[in-house]
Image (cartoon, rainbow, N blue to C red; front, side, top):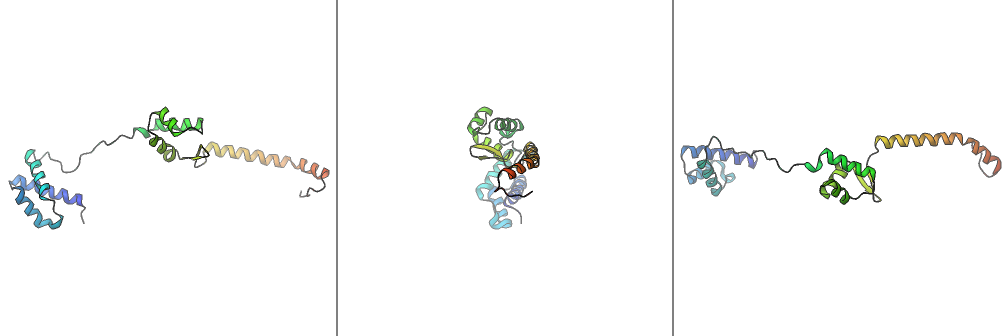
Length: 172
């Protein structure tokens, strides 16, 4: 089944053809109503389209909407993302309002960039990434390696404590 927009375009095409033949608006509406029944566009809409098609060259009339630029996504461009990321990396306690003022975009766009594009979340008044970054993973690996080495070297300390503190369990 065709959507209402498709039906409108079909009916407008019929109106355009019948206007080119010289039919009146009332006659066009009656003919469309016999074919489409309840799905027919109103008499007022038929008259509007008849005025449009009579006033212009039918070959130049476009039934579909033309491409519109819409609102540009200038607030979410890569440059703004990088600035926001640098500000958060420099100061994890930075506020959205401060970022918005520094970058020159709205607080809503800052929130979108921070939470959706950069994937940060607020924890204890600090922005923290939802996932660990490569640097954070490397840092954790280094810390774990250091702790492991420390545990292996501490066997001397454990033996010393066993000799001097009698209630310490002998596990090694």
